[in-house]
Length: 472
View (cartoon, rainbow, N blue to C red):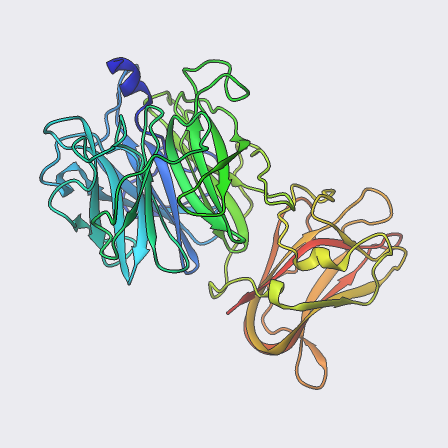
C-alpha cells in the first residue's frame, strides 16, 4: 500500500500569497497564488489564524511535495493576510521531509505547533512539537525529537494529523492517526510529553485520518476524514468528513453523521472554530486555478448546529462567508441575560433570541423563532443583566417566514443609561440582510440593559432567530 499511503496521508489546507501580502478579498479558495493544505484554525482575541502546509508539487505531479507550514490571519473571517512560512522541515533538526498536517494549541502564553513530519529515521511519519511566544512565532523545536513515532507503544499505523484540545480544567488531550488507526493520549502540562498510555478511542465509525476535536455547550466533538461508501463517498479514493460526539474527552464516541461531503481533491481535511459568535469550518479542495490532488487550496464556510447539538451538512461555496468583524474579542453575553420584548406572537418564542442556535437561513425554525406579528412599526427586544456588562458589539440573524414576517426596514442598538434609553455611541450600520449574521460594532458601553429597536416595512412584522451581545 505505499502509493495509497502517499495519496491519502496529509490533509489540505490553505493558499496564500507572499509573506505579509495585502489582505485578499473574500472568496473560496481564500488564496490562489500558490497551493497549501491541511488547515488548522485558531482564534486568539479578535483574530482567526489558519496554519497550513504548502503544496509544492508541479503540475501533473503524482505525490505530495510539502516542505513548509504557512500562517494566514483574518479579523472578519472573509479577508485574509498572508504571514508567510513560519515553520518548515528544518525547524526540526531530527526530521528530513514531509511538512504534513499540523495544529497550534495555546498554553500559558506560549503556542505549541504540533506537526506531521518524516523523522528521517526508523519508521515513517512522526509527530513533532515546535513552540513560540506568539501565534506568529518565531517557532523552534520544543523537544529535540518526536513526541509520537512508530516506537511509541500502541501508536497508529500512520502517525499523522495531530489535534490537541485543552479542556476547561486545564487538561490537554492529543488525538492523531491515519490508516483507520485513531489514537489518543493525555498531555502533561509542559505540552511536550504524554501523561499516561496511548489508547484507541471507540465509536469513531469509519475513521480514516485527520481528527479535529472541539467542545460546544459541554459536549465534545470529533470531526474526521472517512472514505467509506456507506453514505460518505461514491469512491473510496475520496473522503468526506464524519463527526462524533462524547461526554468525556477520551470517549467513548457516538457517531452522528457526515458534516462535509467529499471535495474536489481526494483528501479531505477540516478544522472547526467559533469566531465572533459564528461557527466556521476550514477545509481544503482542488478548486484554485491549476489545482489538483497534490495542489490544494483552503476554503472557509459557515457551520450551523441544530437545537439538539447535531451539525448540519456544510454548504460548500465559492464566495466564502460574509464579513464578520469583531469588537473587543469578548464572549457572547446573551445566554446569561433575561430577554424581554414589546410583543411576541403566541406561536413564536422569545427564547429563540439567546438559545445558542446557528440558523441555516432566515426561514429556519429548527432552533425556535421570535416574531411580533401582527404588530407593525417599531418594536423592540431587550437583554437585562443583574449587574452591569461592558458591551461593544451585537450580531443579529433576522427571521423571515415569507408570510407576515419580513426583514426589517431598519434597526438601532440602544442601551440603558440608568435613567433612559439612548443609541449606543459610534455604532456601525445596523444590518438588515437575510440569511446571514448582521454585526453592529460600537464604542463600548457599561450597562445592565441592551435593546434592539426594530422598524418594520409598512405591511410586515419582524422577527429574530438569534441575537448575540459581546463583551468588550
